[in-house]
Amino acid sequence: EAQVTQNPRYLITVTGKKLTVTCSQNMNHEYMSWYRQDPGLGLRQIYYSMNVEVTDKGDVPEGYKVSRKEKRNFPLILESPSPNQTSLYFCASSFGSANEQFFGPGTRLTVL
Amino acid sequence: GENVEQHPSTLSVQEGDSAVIKCTYSDSASNYFPWYKQELGKRPQLIIDIRSNVGEKKDQRIAVTLNKTAKHFSLHITETQPEDSAVYFCAAKGDSGGYQKVTFGTGTKLQVIP
Image 1: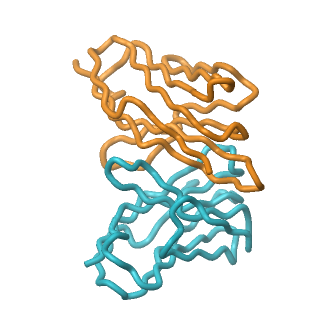
Image 2: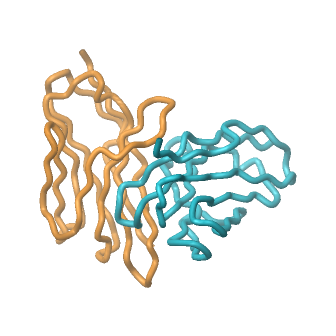
């Protein structure tokens, strides 16, 4: 089954404790993105990747890191999480930047 | 960078009526405009998209129009049904300076009243 998976689905952590949210797709997509969704602000792109080893900042990259060592995986790293990073996070993938994006199920993160 | 504004933020219509959601964008180099539907507690899913070389696209009860000169695009849903109730997001894919960012609007919560 073609899909985008994210783990964990829910996470409660404390300020400053490094965490990684994994994202994997099995559709051989080149373009992958991370978004955060906050009430009233819609979906805001954090980082995107055009292909392996090619990543670039989205609109809200501060406090986040990403890597794309393999085509299927695009982990999101929060080196020192802060409460303002409490949000719902979505990973998405598509064949290209101008194609339908397939979203993962979301990760609800709470930083205390 | 790209800025996408979406209106209205909430919309209530009677079942069977039409609904229209409008978005404006700022980057004239943007060339791809998708619309996503997000049901409560679910992930966003594409419902229709349009590219900058097309002025209108239709898929059954859903249509999108694009005015490149005015830099705005709209989603039209006809004969609305209760299952159309959801949050709808427009987006624009930029193409300036080699960047391939996708910028979303802030969403429209559509309620279809039976």
